[in-house]
Length: 207
Image (cartoon, rainbow, N blue to C red; front, side, top):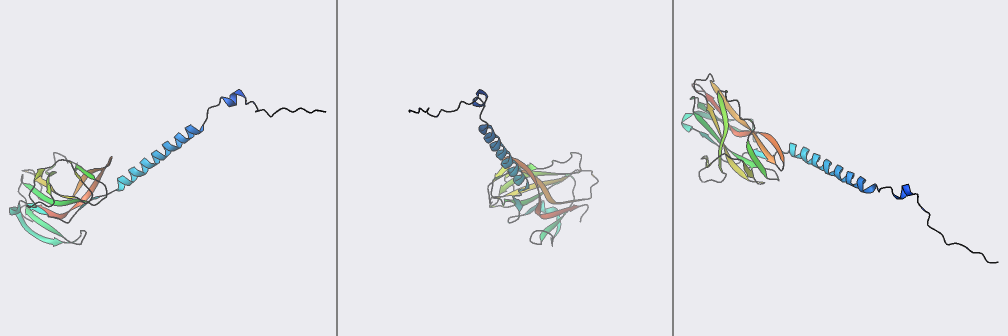
């Protein structure tokens, strides 16, 4: 007696199953997009909290020096002391403060300007005047008018701020010890409130 057998055959898949699209490429793409979005959000949060700018370790200057009526050491800054200058208020006079600005972070920082230009109607205006190299032979003397600049990690520059009191105003005392700068790291813009490292008090007729 002879027994005949058929070789096994591959089962035929239904047409609906055979023509169904593969889903794993779409799922992989969605997962990659999700990871990219999460990385961008984490980077944005880190850059928003990143504060690389600092003052200190350099030359400080106050002009015009002929209007300085006194100076003394005061407490309350990083190392516990700073110099407080008292000046005589003369309306429509430009008072200029120079201070060192450093990039203490690990990424390049572009300083764009003051965060607020102020109200033109204010009796007192504060503007960024210019810069000079941190290792200049004549510290305290402005070399360049202000324009956005980039500080590399560990790099410093001397920045100058102008304070002007309008004539015929009612202001009798003006103080300046901090400034708010707008800067950019990578694509993120942020603001930093910095202590100048010195403080001025402008009084009428005198402090």
